[in-house]
Length: 290
Image (cartoon, rainbow, N blue to C red; front, side, top):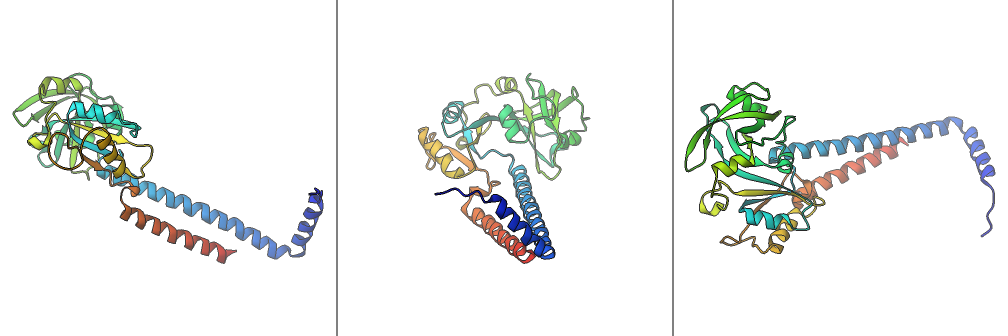
């Protein structure tokens, strides 16, 4: 093919055509610019709304992990956590419940959360740090307000801890806190690994089926993406030598995070249908403007 240097001629023709119909072409250019701005703005707003709804749902669901494996022994946790499908995993150990009279109207759980688990569950302190010693805790500001404790690192906090087999009053030092949401019906008080080892000695192999979840582990996981969460979790269970259904110690309970739109096909279809309708309206509006 012979290359013809006609760029200058084409430019001249385009310029003459524009000058011949200056008003119409100026309006057309303005319409295209306005339509582009409309598309960009609406898509930005739409994306922001989806992310906002998703984040709000995640907070209501208790975190942004794709899912959680529940009521595990330490051995089960270690085996599941090594699966190649899992990109990130956080450990949580259920220690009991704070049953102070001031907390009776708001269920308040006592847990150990490692750094990853605290971040996935929105429990990571924005002021201070996670507890390290057996007499240290971190929690949210709503729990502190109910207990009448000032939002200040180093404050003493007295808790009545229900370990199911006994209830003990213990004094703690506040090492970290974060803003709580009054709309949440439950609170989380995070304790240290040392607290678990001292107060739950010998209870780290308990299973929920035995009616005692104290000392059980939870694995909060993130995969590479939020597609097929349910299928991925079942694959992790089966590949690790456990079962999803039935009875016995080899059965693993799990939960997929419903906050992700892709978790269920029903939610996925409704969301994408709404997005499709919105996109068609935007295109039609842009056509009319031009």
